[in-house]
Amino acid sequence: MRTARTQSTFMFRPWRWFRFFLQIISPAVLMAIFLWFLVVYSNIRYYEQHDEAAQADAIAVFGAAEYDGKPSPVLQARLVHALKLYQSSYAPLVITLGGQGGDAHSEGGVGHDFLLEHGVPEGRIIAETESNSTEESIDQLIVIAQKNHLKRILAVSDGTHLYRIHEICAARGLDVITSPRTSTGPLYSKLRTQRVLHEMLSYTLWRLHPH
Image (cartoon, rainbow, N blue to C red; front, side):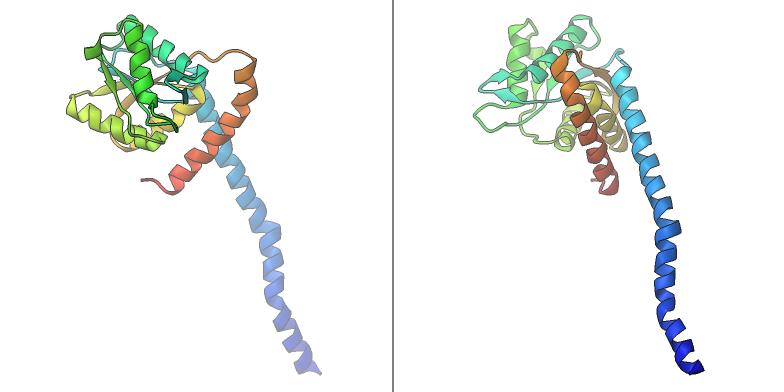
């Protein structure tokens, strides 16, 4: 009988360790995850609220949706902000980024045409029209910067987007400062939470699988 009891106790001992893990280790893991996302959110918030606009070699406008050759409200807001920076002589060149969005036009091409229509000379605009994600846009931006000997880039996008842009550029050796486009109105407020969550997850996935 003693042998049977000893064997029974031994057989169930792994379950005790499993319960110990759930009771002690799991809360620690959950706390670490919570702290990670808190830090990421804080950094997103910082870049959203701080305009680092300063002298640069070029202004890079990250793409957003276009509708049959016309910029979406989000893309237009980014382009208008970049145009103001250009007109204020922050940089002598504007780079528009973004590939096709499902029609015959590209985000970069639409951005190019918008700036041209608003007085930026053709020779002061470079349109990148192949990228389909933030990382691809940054890869193309690095190529453009190297070809044109651009050392410092002033990146324009939504404020919630800029932390991820800055970190990916820094990891790839590109000197970038950031300037958030103006974000006002009820529509932006409604979408902000969704955008912040998207950026938190996207940044985390990039850190887990950096390219």
